Length: 430
Image 1 (spheres, rainbow, N blue to C red):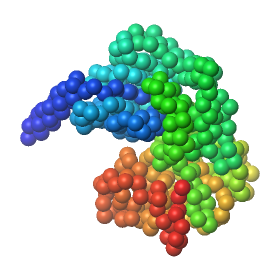
Image 2 (image 1 turned 60 degrees about the horizontal axis):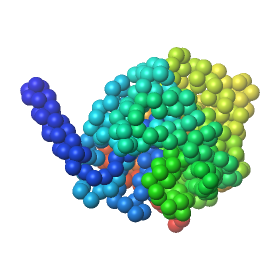
Image 3 (image 1 turned 180 degrees about the vertical axis):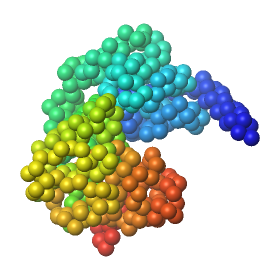
Image 4 (image 1 turned 90 degrees about the vertical axis):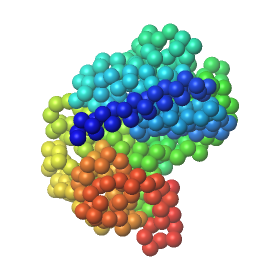
């Protein structure tokens, strides 16, 4: 019976693959692939938003596997003009598979850093994997590469396609005058040739220059009007769970960065928080991902970076007790360890104050977004590890105890982006 099921799955997959390749061959659209260790999702979503002003666009982000590429191709229609795909490197060879199906006309690489450590181990291996979408380009295609990262810049030799660079330190499109405004929003300029484009964003933190610059560079290369680009950037909201801002009326403001937490970028949100003007700053830290070796020094370093910024640091998760906290932080209550996510929420609810900012930083497995969500909804699902790889907002079962649904996802649309808090007529988030 298992053999028949496996055969059925194989036949179904190959039928979908044949349909996808056929759609790709017949399509007159331009196909754009985006990969990198950071900034992929924001690049895809922002670039798609810009192109949608005057064109028919299909896009796929978050789910970035070969199956996602096949699914995107299956939905293509003859009048679609662009397809924008996020391509992930979860395992060796995956991007080559995606590229062989998707056949990009334009490829964007945002960053190379240690991620998926158990699969790749070395930075060189990650760079080779991400270079697959550059090697797949036709000679009349276009590679857009991050000039600031040597491993990305070196990919220019992997294709006969023309190359354009974006970056802060050099390139054809240069991000300049990066500023974090008092509320955390990013403002900066992009210089290209004799021209300059001022961008005021709703994105939180200077590190978001990467996704914005990658998307804007591609849009400019495609001939989109700069005024249209600036307007789209100004209207673009943060992706939920990726430095997204959530204001609770008469309560705290949450910054949720709970989708991923590779060690190489853990402290970037702390830098952002340090520049925000508010009455009190607190940081909640969960699980760190993508690092080699002993977890103890990693969590210790993250805690010490957080304490330089925050009035209070809270940690939850299996490694939280290993940070070797300073005695004075333990004695004063500046550093707190919690056994579970529900306990963190109880503490935050009891001690919250209007005007404070609470940064929540973790990988997805702990679903720390529930701490914010419970301020505006009756959250009943509180397991510390449910095994679900999507956010609670997309799952949609957070109002029911875990025992009643066992984490089986509804995959609903995010309910908290414009949710109303309990007992309040005002919108809870912005």
